[in-house]
Image (cartoon, rainbow, N blue to C red; front, top):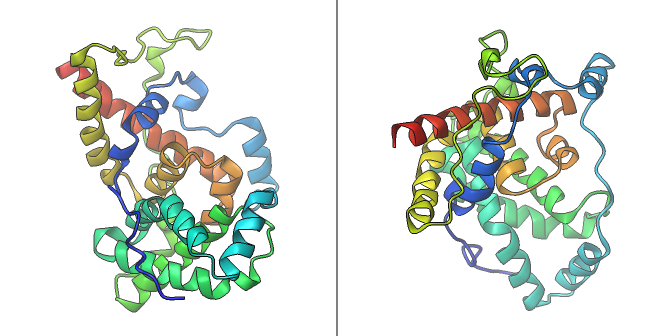
Length: 261
């Protein structure tokens, strides 16, 4: 089965979903998380040496879609590409950068269709595809001598200052100086949403790779934490810290932009 995998491709930046990403970035944060500490459950998992959380089995419609794909159903192929191609580009950019994203996605599609017969339904089809893409991106980096470091998922901010100034919270953990609201539905507010998408795109690309990958998967693609852990091969504790620190940086950038405006 030979196809043009660029079909269904759209804008591959976070600007495709600025409202969701900005709302999460501006969500309330307590003083414990402001210091970048994982919660008790994540800490326990980390101390026990737990690996990536196990994802749930593939839903029934995924299994049916795979059967149709294996039977050569063109409509099923179009559905899968429309659903996953742009999210794949976004994730590929976080690992291989703009230069390698298209090639990584093309190679991933080829690997997906070659390997569909081996799909066992232990995770969702999307998770399975994203995991292949992550591995292909690393392989691409090695082949092109643009190696993605083994440490690309490590939090390079460990030991730095808190992500949010603890002085912004009172003794009960409530905001003393909350984030600036931005959800007005006026024409000016709607225009601001478009501008925020541009700001988020720029700030997202400035994050360290691990934070960027987790933010893209959680806040743009809407993947649950267990799927993110499986896709990236990280622990729940690591995922939580990367997510919080990435969100905190985006929130700080948005606040600077809104205050300046």
